[in-house]
Image 1 (cartoon, helix red, strand yellow):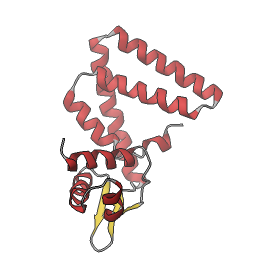
Image 2 (cartoon, one colour):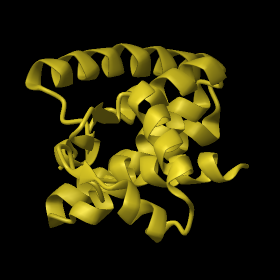
Image 3 (cartoon, rainbow, N blue to C red):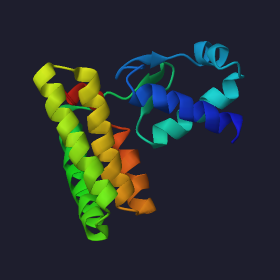
Length: 160
């Protein structure tokens, strides 16, 4: 994997996990020093992340983490429901007992987390639940599109 891809993945991960918040300005200089690379891979990463809808490059201002509007969030969640519903249907057709047990365990863990107000456990169990559905669908194109979509939602803010 090339330097640009590594930097792109690292910045994407920081945006998706909330280390960089919606609306936050990202500095080429600061990030190039942090990742110990020239500004060129940072610039290329920004271009890729803009195509994915994660950042906005504003001429003469800089690059900011995209802050979806309420309407955009509604649209993203609507798409998520449809795509994840399709994935769940594909998983159900395959009927993997292991996947079904993993889903049951994740739901059980979420219930325990709610009863004990354990946000960390809830987020982890929720991640497992959605990952099992996505992976169990065994459809690489659906998985790619779902990840592209999920990366645009500051999801962890809405989980608990």
